[in-house]
Image (cartoon, rainbow over all chains, first blue to last red; front, side):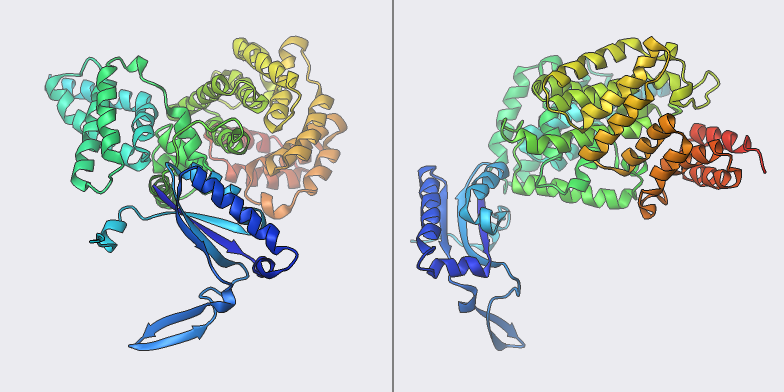
Length: 127
Length: 415
């Protein structure tokens, strides 16, 4: 079963990535977590996202493209990254979510991949 | 003749459903991790039994028959769907496993796992108790709605949502690991106690299903104690329910009237249960980790002392309630605390404590009005007492309790 860990961070947390003092501690914690995921053999994919200020939101309304500066949700905590893990149960996904660096300063939302939907919305890779 | 066979068969289906519902759902769901699917399959099996048993006779092993029928439904369903790539191998495994153990008594009891799933932190906490009442104890939405005073339709929708989450997110059907037990256990204990509470409120014992519910709650606590013997709160809860259960026969007079605790004859109490409760509580006490259920059990143990000493140590009870309110404040606890202090320092003191409770939260809370009426009557304030009695009577569901309060109200002497 695949679970997505959606990482939510506050503006301060995004700022820490750039800070001369804090950036190494921030990155180090994530690096250690990523190593643990690889060692456990459960890491399927995932990436950090750039700061919400770099986001651009797109809508198509009456065939007209509407482009807007900024992220979709106007909230204090913003999506900062995502991780995809292969695990047998929600309980184990919650355990890995709790070990994620963002759990202690932001929030981690755990969502299963829609198992029944996936084959209906994807096509097999022919390569 | 035919109708009699029918009736016997119907009664047999009903009996096995009542006795084994939770056990069968747990057995099926632990393997598929799908509570709703297990319940549907079992419901289908029960319907099949209603047509098959009158015709072919009641099987030698009714539980085994139902389990096989339900399992076949699940396998068929999985075959049709084919999308559950996870569940088909599991079901094949299950088929083999169940065929190997023919004797229902040797089936593993998975109800505790199901209980921990019902009280999982990923499930909306307000639905923990209803979910447990339905899946582990087999109550329908109608009965749960009646017991918890909620509309059955609302409960039904929220139960469906919770079961969908269990299936879609694949919550593990396991007894949590030692380090996780503390965060999970409280919800389980609360759900068991809520089930017991519903049974307790039926003072007249009129509803057979509710009386059984109390026994099943005690049984669940016993299973939990076997599984987690080092937790003092598990033992505290078990002791608390045993103390209450011991008094069940004394709560009704021979002519069916409700008898309050202070007027009960200890000779009517079930002493073997009190003894068992005392044993549990003393083991819990030695663990030196006090908690809500241990204190509530301790309060009941003081009441039980009356069987030996002939009197009730009200000061000890009041002190325990003070401790309880610091550890786990609640409206019910605050009212009981007022009643306990009134026993020691008189009704005026009790009334003062009642007045400190947020009045909005007790408008529709029967115990508040019953206790308030009792204080006012003792203080000779008949008019105010009558009004409080009226409110309490209005809020009482139980006919025996209503009759008791009405009698007290009618004894008031007007000024």
